[in-house]
Length: 352
Image (cartoon, rainbow, N blue to C red; front, side, top):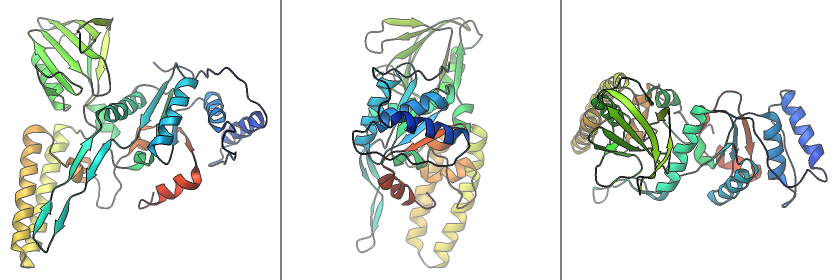
């Protein structure tokens, strides 16, 4: 599915651009770890980056220091590379209130957040593109170094459906639930699926189009991309890959292992609180954790599942979680735009 990077621009490099492009590409081929491109505002640094990407031909991450600048770069790169996968990855929170505790009044304030649905779709589109092809440019904010599910798990649980293969309706429905899709036959939205007889319609978390799978007995008869609003058939497909509806996914075996390690840590912490005479804290911790464990056991997810990411990933204490950078191949190219602002942002995180 990958294509060579094809730069589309109505102009050619001018001034010092040609020299800068040649030196950057040469430095890359010599194995230089880092290079700096200097230029005043309006000097065409984005075009210079685009020319370097086209010549080097590797998956590329462009980091900007805020959403506005990232959106501007995303728009420009989409114009430069209309035939390639240009994606956008920033924080999807419109509103975020972290959990808090007020000891004076014994008040616990639960975490609350409002997620921007379109930005969430774009984030999923970015990880999906990185799994499927190499001609990818992801424009991201510092959100790219924040915790994200393991790419190995994300790829392992992907559902692949081929026309003509033997597959039962129940098997497809069970696999969709396993990768965090919700069944809703009335409100058909992103991250959900609906069933009408032997017809299954899926709205992938990363697409504006929906996928319709028609079965004939236990055989996949047709696979189509359809308009989720009108149901109009847009394209016939021989095969379709359905990637998870959430980035925090895992296999059943890892989930069972995670539940065991969560239980062990819970027992340890509850015993510590009781030894300190903090019975209320011990009771609160046990009640909340066991509620989350029951949700994980029954549904595969729970509110604040990222709090258990170390157990789900099987990481050692203190080991960093996966992030967007782990979804890139080892030979990817990175640009840090406005580095005098962006680099301190990245260093603001522990060992960033």
